[in-house]
Amino acid sequence: MGKEMEVRENFSKTKTMELPRNVVIGHDALLEVEKVCDNLKLGKTALLVVDETTKKVAGDAVASLLSDAGYTVEDFIIKEADKETIEEVKTVSVENGTSFLLGVGGGRPIDVAKCASTNAGLPFLSVPTAASHDGIVSSRASIKSDNGRESIVAQSPMAVIMDTYVISQSPHKLLAAGCGDIISNSTAVKDWLLARNLKNEYYSSYAASLAEMTAHLLLERADSIKPKLEESAWFVAKALVSSGVAMSIAGTSRPASGSEHLFSHALDNISKPPALHGEQCGVGTIMMMYLHGGDWGRIRNGLLAVGAPTSARGMDLPEDDIIEALVTAHKVNKDRYTILGDEGLTRDAAENLARTTRVI
Ligand SMILES: [Zn+2]
Image 1 (cartoon, rainbow, N blue to C red):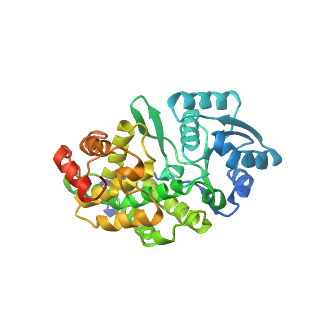
Image 2 (image 1 turned 90 degrees about the horizontal axis):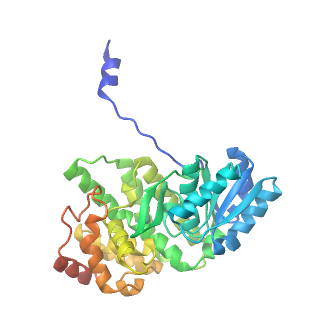
């Protein structure tokens, strides 16, 4: 055979990119829930996963909108995002003949709906009531385990409905944490490039550029992120979608999760209780940017501008926890090569790093 066959033999790359089909963002986006469900032809029996707070904030509204439109809607109120709860929600969805799930909440209800729907082989919709981390758009879930929290891979939501009014009314601390999670792309991308160069790891320039640009745009606009302002909720929500898409293109969380996430995961296992995911990742980004020789001051100023913490005290964590997390972070996920290397930091180096960057 001629040239064509040669090309076929030489090119063997295949990749699946799992993206949400519909993303609705904006004022009163909740009112679109019926239209979104109808368009996606998800069936008529919905299971709503909520917690006590998010049930009142948005869950009840979603339930009545869908009920009025002829859907059968059941509630499942969760207390924690752990394996037992996921199993219970899966069992209920199978027993009820549920055709799709909705996770309505900041993080935990969405994580539970994501994992339970994956296990039950059903689709799910993500309806965030706060914009505190990129898990509201991605296929990743943070689940409570015996020694802290673990990050597991499930499915991406079929649709994401982000009501900017609802999000703007959530505590500002959550939105600021979302900013921290987005800003962390700055170091995640640097770690990814390092892993490509030193370990020949798969790397996607498209995904890396998108993730980096998202963090860059947020840092540029950091001064305009203010409490209770719907425009701020809009900007952060869109940035979280953009980060989620970068991960979907990459087929890995690499573009949005590097050494700063390892630091945050280490804190999750050390601190009782830890701070918010995005807060810890933001502080981690300051320190990891220093290790990369980058402009850590810009990261710190950006976090300060959005009202996110930049220190142990700001996160209400003991300084010792920061040091312990820094020296153990490289062990959290051995498959994720980062600036922390295979050996991690010595205790002295960790202390110097935290002091120089004013984290302690
Ligand atoms: Zn994150």
